[in-house]
Image (tube, rainbow, N blue to C red):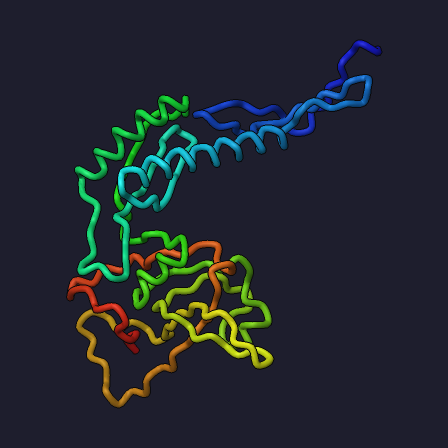
Length: 251
C-alpha cells in the first residue's frame, strides 16, 4: 500500500478551457508521505495570475495607442471583449468619442500583442462604452458628475438606513453629486460622493401633473468609492434631448 496512491474525489478535477482554468470537479491525491498534490485552489490562483497578466497586456497596449481601458470581459466561450474610451480632461473644450477607426486600430494592435504573449481566445471584440458605461475610478466620477448613475453597495444599508429605505437594500439610482467634507471631532474629513433621487412615480406619457401636488422630498445617499461593488451610468434614453449635467432631478 505504500506505493499506492489514494484518491479522494471531493469535488472533481480542473479543465483548461479558453486559456483559463475552469473548476469542473476536484480530485485530491493523497500520497503515503502525507503530502497533497495541488488542487482547485492551485488552479484558481493560476487563473487569477492569468487575469492579472491579461489586464496588464491589454492596458499597456490600449494606453500606448492613446486610449483609456474601460473594461475587460472574458466569456467561457472564448470571447474576449475590450471596451475603450477617449482620455478625458476637465479642461478640454468638448468631449471626444470613440469611432470605428479607433476600434479597428486597437484590435489590430491587440491581436499582435496577445499572439506574442500566447494568450488564448477565440474571438476579439473591441468597442466603445455603451449607455451603461461602468465608472471605475475617481476621474470617472468627476467626469460624470451631474449624470444619473446606478450603484451597487458591497454590503446592505443595515442600521444606516434609519427606516428611510430597506435595511437589505444595496442598489440605488440617482444623480451623482460631490459631497462636502464632514467635520469629525473637529477634523475635516475627505470629501466623498452622493446620489440624489426622488421616489415620486414617473408620469405616464401624456399625463398632466398638477402644479398643486406637493413635491416628493428628495433623498440623499452618501458613499465612498471603497463602499461600491459596481457603478454605471444609468441606461436612460430621453427622446426630448439630453439634459445638461447638474440639472436637478425631476419631482
